[in-house]
Image (tube, rainbow, N blue to C red; front, side):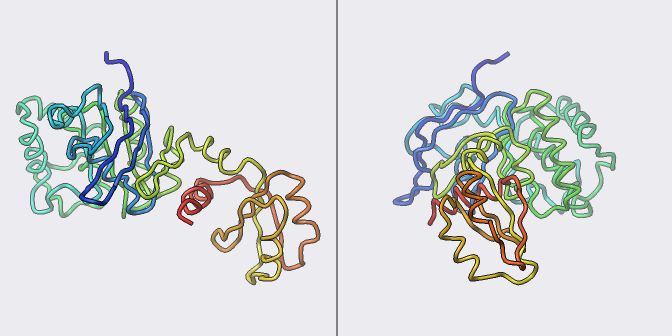
Length: 308
């Protein structure tokens, strides 16, 4: 059994001409961990993942994937990783069986072993339709599960999932995340990018990226405590925002952050005394209640704050 981290990244930078897509990033991922990348479009998440899959060679810095480096151009790494891209990766005009046979051929898998793996993965995802089923006829959630099966057909150690549930129904997203947890129970390491905050909450640790740089790293709870060390209140203006009150609150001593949250506002303070002083004597049109910060709040404070 292999020991050491599944990923070890040190001062990794990836450049395209004068443009730096990933800028001096360092982190490690333990074996069997669900590790998330969170950030806006263009933050560098996909470029980092493609590099760690062996598809791009680092411009500088180093990366070990399953203990392997890029000395062979990433060929060794490609054999031990599975990659599911943002775009749907199966061919709609082929059958389920033809798609998986094609994936097995690309990996140069022995036919008997490929058939055995296919049966195992169909059992894992609960797929019971004929191999002759056209992929185009399948629901979106089932297609994504088949794409996952195709990505891990060769039984990789590390699985990279780039926004795997984009555009599928909430029920299908929940089912897909059950599959991710099953993979880690089987000893796989999963690195996933997502725009959904409820999905990010299910990661063991999260790396927040902005403009190619890693600006925060930790578990969801660690990120929340780091961004919001004091209490938070949710303000309900009952349909009509009190602009004068908001402006006065922006000047309150001890206010860390004030921002809209759906139809309401969230106000974070340094400590309970600052919160109590600021919210004493609320206008009749405003009500407040204590709330715990969400990852969406963390995203706004850390990433959007860094961009500002």
